[in-house]
Structure formats: structure tokens, C-alpha cells
Image 1 (cartoon, rainbow, N blue to C red):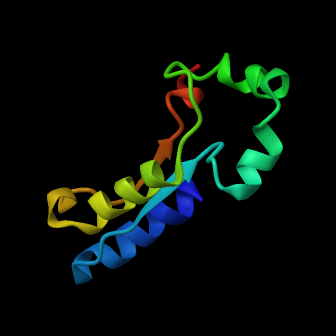
Image 2: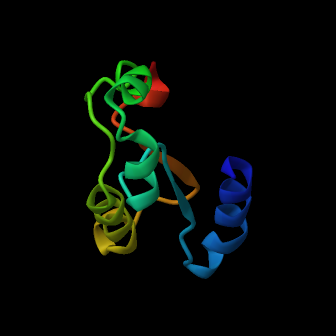
Length: 89
């Protein structure tokens, strides 16, 4: 996905089209809640997330809305994790 995002950004940038990707890890959707509601199971992942919590749907939506806004007008070709720092560990 990273390379596809970068290539599309290079191809579409001259047409003033920005391309970015959002890469969440565990998000507390109904499926996420069903899979990670057991505290013992969740601990294995939560211990590796510096912010100490799973993402909520609103966290992902807010970031997508930022990318869609003019406030991110110089952002293209990026794949951004929404994971509380999980990929940094």
C-alpha cells in the first residue's frame, strides 16, 4: 500500500490530486471490541502501544477529515499509521 500511495501521488500530483493512506491497527469497531474485549488478550497488544489504548473509530475519522481538508494541502504520498505509536516500537 505504501508504494501504491507514493506512485499514485507522483502520477496524480500534477493534476492537483493528493493521495494519502491511513493505516490504523486495532480500532474499536464492533469487530475490534469482539476480538479485544478480553483484558488478558488485549494486554499483549496494549503493552506495545506507547499511548496505552486502542484507537476509536473517531480517531481514524478525524485523521481522514484532516487529510481531506485544506489544512493538509501539502501532504501527499504519505501512509500514516493511526496506532498510538504501535509501529514505533
